[in-house]
Length: 470
Image (cartoon, rainbow, N blue to C red):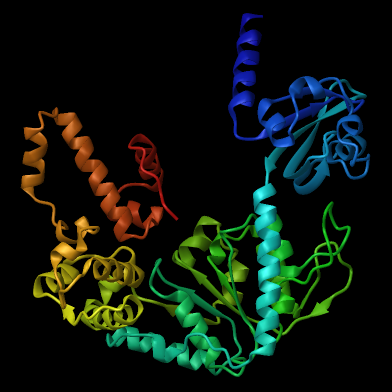
């Protein structure tokens, strides 16, 4: 008996402290458990809900539109269902729910619902749609507006020039393109260049980050929705329809859910889409360019990317080298960005000093070209009368001029009167952070560089409270 009480206490503690709403109803659809997170999400006090029926607390729902009542009737679970409804006070709630039946007696079943608030995400979803429709309209009215072309890509490194040459060949084709490169290497720059130097240049170019929006909403954004497909849904074209005749860039394709990947594969193979909740097949002529900041073969091996979709996307493959592998381009890029920000910031900077140049060449640039651009912009904001960028202008980039770790660092730790285990922990934490930076926060690659297992690295990330930034 004491053990059962302990288990009950543990369960209640977990339920009250997880970041999700929990709502449990009995076989009659009346609430028997309702946690405080769900109360905050739905704008209700627990006392208002306990013992009440679903339709009594949420008058906009009925036995067909309520996921809890549907599961009670069918005794089948519903996963990741969008739901939009009103409470008794008229507040609108937008959630993603997973609802599961459970047996009370051999004849009776209850249902438990786990909910996440997506009100802000849904508002963002609607705004994205409105903006995308407006942009698509502008594109049709102003066909002369162009994005980046290959003239915008700066570099003289032989390997980099080979990638540009391959990308130019891709521009003459209509095949799918898969671009792999670390964060900040210029993947979208290549994608835009391929589009705007192709036969599709006068048609829309639309980009969508697959990691920025939950899968349940991303499906509607890509394929469109039909009124009545779910509560609050309206007739709305998706990105495939908006990009008809042009190019759709799917950024971070490896972050797309596997179910949605399967639907994308079908679209690529069959050449038509079906809106969410719709019955009609809509032909679409869209070229897909997909990008990933993780090695796609590693993503396939880990199960993040479907193998069949990988093969379908990987018709033309571009691997953009990180800046640390083409350091001979750094002076050229620095000169280009100085000219750019002279115009933007109304400065008169001529070049970088030799000391800055040496620091640039010795730095690994984990943020790649984007980091280089941002560092120069930051430095030029510090310039008053100088014509040469010097180390003191890069005050915000301490790592740029303190990039080398030596024995003096460890002597300093000893002088701080730290114990041996504390010093070793500090060193280990620093090594992990440096590995993550040099591998663009890729866990698998960082673990390989450190010579440890992926699971071991994840354990150490928790141990040292190291957060991975996207």
